[in-house]
Amino acid sequence: MLTGMERIKQLVETNPERKLQTLIHLINETTLKEVHAEQEKAKSPGIDKVTKVEYEKNLEANVQKLIGRMKTFSYRPQPVRRTYIEKEGSDKLRPLGIPAYEDRLVQGVIAEILEIIYEPKFYDFSYGFRVGRDCHQAVKHLDNKLMGRTSWVVDADIKGFFDNVDHDWMMKFLEHEIGDKNLLRYIKRFLKAGIMEAGEYAETDSGVPQGGLCSPIMANVYLHYVVDIWFDKKVTGQSRGECSMVRYADDIVFCFQYKDDAENFYKQFKLRLAKFGLEISEEKSKIVKFGRFAGNEAGKIDFVGFTFMCSKSRNGKFMVKCRTSEKKLKVKRAKASKWIKANMHAPIKELINKLNQKLRGHYNYYGLSHNIAQMRGFYRHITYTLFKALKRRSQKDKMNWSKFYKIMEYFPLLNPRIMVHLW
Image (cartoon, rainbow, N blue to C red):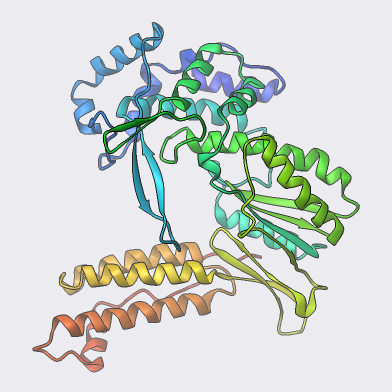
């Protein structure tokens, strides 16, 4: 027997143009418990201060009460707790919205419903926050386009995208596919729930808070209508040459065969964003000459933490090289140095085991073809920083390179290696 979610998925596949009704029943005891089971115990609580451990002490009763309030429409999402984390490569802080625990459960089910509805409708050039898709696939896609007829690239940045999503437009977009007014009512309540920061409540007239379980899929829905469909239906039809795009969440690169197409698009793109309450970041966006005919005028493109540049193979043929962006590398080095300094007094074995976990994560992400030199540089930075830390903590033993290398023989740091081949 098919579950409720499976039936909706079947409807979407067999009749993709159909507007879906009666979806609210999918938020039930089974689906709420499934989302609850997926939650991490260490997650920070929202303004309700309820954790997963506390909630599951009376899980059956809590879920039943929640369902009862939803049926009578007395359930209202609580304001998200605003907190801040460091923004990589900047002195600024990135805002995060942490939902109350029950709100997290309901959002989780809603996110699953939206994914089932929209996943078949999203374009192949969209990669962020999608099941079975990742940044490396996006990098490969872009590499393939840059190796083709691309001669000009629009490297676009949307200013404060998550904070500026227009709620009215968001609801209009959702209404294209969803006819269940009750589900739409709860989604709107989440959008309008507000923010609690330092004991002060603030209304939310726009934006989807980063940290919410619904935010990634809703961001994709918004950009699907604002950018993806528009580019596919209108921009490609108006361009005299080949054009394409690759998007990972709000990180987007547009490729063009001809300069005039790129310049016309850049003007139209600013107007398109403005219509939906968004704005391009002029200082971070640019039109770049790129490709096999760019020669000495070739620029560089930044995408998902990598820098793409024109190069040549050993036999002189054009190729695209992908390196860790200098901005990201600088940030990663600084974070690693800070961590080593803070943990320098831990036992050697524990210290290096944790360092290897961090190195493994770095290699898994940045270990792309032609990026081995940058990873070796990162490895050398970690090694030298670790040596300085151990020397500082062992003044009596007078740590030197000879002693350090003996330690490395017993507890070696992971060597860099290519994890992903672009072709």
